[in-house]
Length: 211
Ligand SMILES: [Zn+2]
Image (tube, rainbow, N blue to C red; front, side):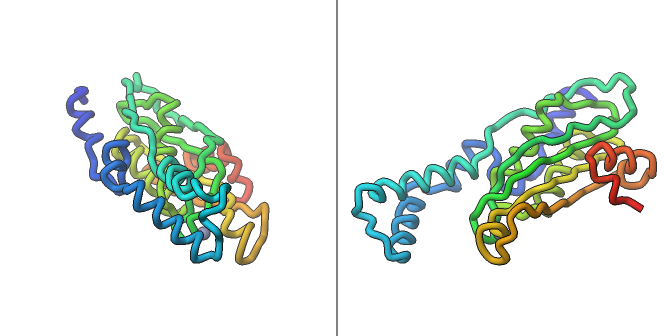
């Protein structure tokens, strides 16, 4: 594949604003600050107090930052015939639960069996961030990362496992701190070939629960 063909393959429809420019169009900072101020008033708070006076702007900016991934290019290289599993595990991430606007955070384990191309290893962490900095549910986040790796790399197979703690479970509702939700998305030989699937899940540390 030539570099221009690869660039075309990487130009896929995006499911949310993934560049600073796109996010800027989608986000109205002043309206967000006004909404935070209205929320504080509705919660019975004195927004004229010295501590709260500038809180609406700070909260709006915090959310804008948490919802805006840093733009990057998923650089790839010729695979030179390497046809075994590549796994990068324990990639930390932070995201925001779409149902409660509270953080969930944890680690992602990414693996793939290359086709013709391999990806710069640090770029795998950026792919995670690209989708984590959004209002998310863990299931969708897992699938979007896997789909993106397929789109960018056209690999023989891909696997994504995410382990995360959701603050909406530990701070409110059932209030059970320390529980971890584990999701996975497997495709190609990582899903269909026993050897690759077992090897991937074992390297992620979740193979022990298989069988
Ligand atoms: Zn939630």
